[in-house]
Amino acid sequence: MNSLTGRDLKRAGGADVSTSGTNGIVIIGAGQAASQAVMSLRSEGYEGPIRMIGDEAEPPYQRPPLSKKFLAGEIGFDRVELKPVEFYANAGCELLLSTRVAAIERAKKVVLTSDGREIAYDKLIIATGSRVREINVPGFDLEGVYYLRSVADVHEIQKNFKPGAKMVVVGGGYIGLEVAAVAKKHDISVTVLETAERVMARVVDPIVSHFYERIHREEGVIIRTGVTVAGFEGEGGRITHVVSGEGESFPCTFVVVGIGIIPNTELAQDAGVTVENGIVVDEMTRTSDPDIYAAGDCTNHPNGVYGRRLRLESVHNAIEQGKTAAAAITGKDKPYNQVPWFWSDQYDLKLQIAGLSTGYTEAVTRGNPAEGRSFAVFYLKDGVLIAVDAVNRAPEFMMARQLIAKQAKLDPKRLADESISMKEVANA
Ligand SMILES: Cc1cc2nc3c(=O)[nH]c(=O)nc-3n(C[C@H](O)[C@H](O)[C@H](O)COP(=O)(O)OP(=O)(O)OC[C@H]3O[C@@H](n4cnc5c(N)ncnc54)[C@H](O)[C@@H]3O)c2cc1C
Image (cartoon, rainbow, N blue to C red; front, side, top):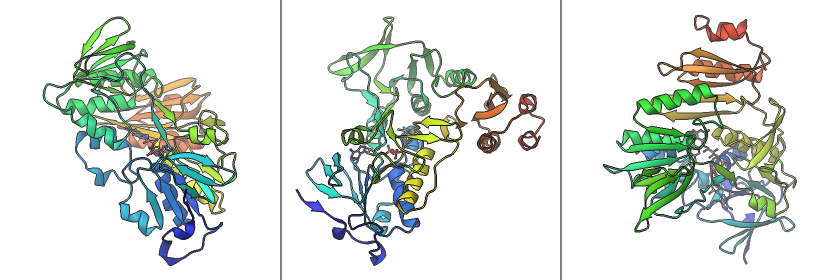
C-alpha cells in the first residue's frame, strides 16, 4: 500500500505552515460539515494540507434541495453544490471523490480506503453523516422502490415523474411530505402512508401535524395515518402495489420510502472511538481520541441550552460543528452550544422550527392553524420558551430563536394575542 503524506499535496497559496506535523488534516465524508470544516480551517489560519475523502461522485452539496427545488427540476446542480470544485483546489484541499474509507487505524494515524490506499493524518475529522433507514418487508428489492439521500437518488426518482404516474410515499415525515408536495406539482397522484396516528409526529406538535394533513389533502394528496406497510407486490420485478398490515392494497407506479436515517458511526466504532447513539463528542467536537474530531449528523453532542446530549439531523448543526472542529484544531476553543433549528418547504409553506419541544407543559398558538396558511406554535416549559414551530411566520421564528437562547419567561396570553407585536411580547 502507498502511504501518502502531506508533502505530496499541493499547498495553499504556496505556504507550508502546517500547525501540527506534515500529514495535515484528513476529513472523512464530503458533505455539509466537511465542506464547512475546509472553509473554516482556512479562515482560522490553518495552512497545512487538507484531504477530503467522500464516497459520492459529486463535490460537497446541500441536501435540502433534493426534496424541494432540485427534485422539482427548478434548479440545477450548480445551485446545489456548496462550492464550485475549483474552490477546493484553490484552498489547497485535495478532494478524493468516489472513494470510501474502509477503516481508521488509530495507532498508525492512517485511514484505509476501499481501493487499498493508506492515508496518514495528524488530525482527523469524521463527517460521515447518515444513511437512510431501509424498509425490511417482502418485495423491498422490487424495481421502483426508492429512497432519497443523494443527487443520484433524485435522478432515479425523477425518471418516474411521468403522466399517469402514481406514487406511494412510505413515511409521513418531512422528507416524505416534501416529496409529496413536489410530485403534486408534476400532476402525479400521491398517497402518503404513515404508521403513526399523525404526520411528522417525531418533530412537531399535533396542532402542526393536523395543519399539514389538512393542507396536503386540500392539495389533493391522500394522507393515511395509522397504516403500517407490510409488503410490496409487483409484476415482472417491478412494484405495482403497496400492501398494508390490514391487507389493504395501494396501487402505484413507484414508491419513495422516507422512514428515517441511521448515523454513519461504524468507522468510529470499529476503531474504538466512543459511540453512543452517534459519535460521542464534547462541545468542541472532540471525540474520545484527542486526534479525532467529528461533526454533523454522525455526532452525539452536549447542548447547554437544554442541558442534555443530542443527535441532530440538520444543516445548522453540520455547519456549526464544522466551524467548531476547525477552530478547535487550530487551538481556538469556540464551543458549539446553540438553539437547534430546522426548516421544511412544502407547497408555499415554510415551516421553521427552533428549539426542542420535548417536555413542554403548554403549547400557545398565535394565528389560526385551522384556516389559512400562517401561524406559530410556541412551547413553554413552566412558562419558559423552549421551542417554536412557525409556518410562514419568519418574525415569530427569528424572535423565538433569541428568546429560547435567553430562556425567556413569557406571558402565554400576550404571546397568543396577535394585536401585540412579538417585540412587545419579548420586552414585557
Ligand atoms: C432529502 C433531504 C432533505 C433535507 N432537508 C433538510 C432541511 O430542509 N433542513 C435541514 O436543516 N436539514 C435537512 N436535511 C438534513 C441535512 O441535509 C443533513 O443534516 C446534513 O446534510 C448533514 O450534513 P453532514 O455533513 O453531517 O452529512 P452529509 O451531508 O450527509 O455528508 C456526509 C458524507 O459522507 C459520506 N460518507 C459516509 N461514510 C463514508 C465513508 N466511509 N467514506 C467516505 N465517505 C463517506 C456520505 O456519503 C456523504 O456524502 C435534509 C436531508 C435530506 C437527505
